[in-house]
Image (tube, rainbow, N blue to C red; front, side, top):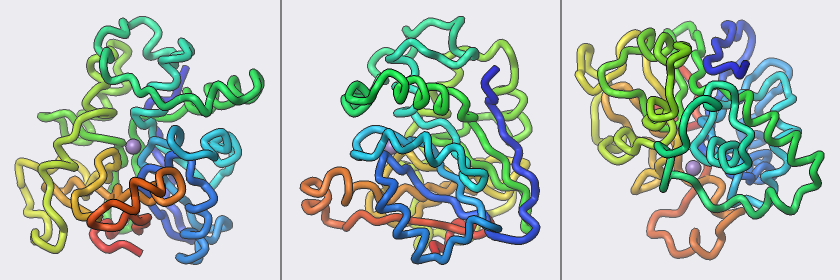
Length: 264
Ligand SMILES: [Mn+2]
């Protein structure tokens, strides 16, 4: 059974660093980890999902996911690959693909160039990714979900929801695809700290960190206590022509899980 929810133990001795979508740009990310003096002996790296597609090194995902210091939630591109290859995790097997429809991604050409063995290893690794990760910190609980927490759910409610055996593919869509947090948020420089009881916040957790939507001005955005840290770090490696045309240059954003408003 795929692990749909992962609760990490408290990191007693190092940092928990969260990074936006990776999209197969692993070498570029390695340089960023050096910049922030990432120490795999004590630090952990948690990705908001979308490990594959677009970047040339997408197949390297299997080498990262075996590292004890690396964790990731499932992103829509990761899910699309699993679905496209008809190797769904168990929680999807009983449900129709109808819900997904137009949501399937079509950027999996890199996958077809891999050997059969490599393809199997990639699918097996991605199928084990959880939908949500919970990080306990000395400043409170931090959640990580690729796209969004469905309206009306607090964090414990979300955990109950995704662990329920009745969960359908339709129920999954907001977690993987919704753009509300990334498009309705505001740059953190323009909004004050989260207000207790803000209806836009997810209750029961200090904040939830998302990827999925590249923020308009490539800064960290916040909607209530929902923080979007996806600033397109993978673009320079995967889509240099596109990146060169952007008004605001794309770049990696790495944050300490406790202080997602303050990029490292
Ligand atoms: Mn993405």
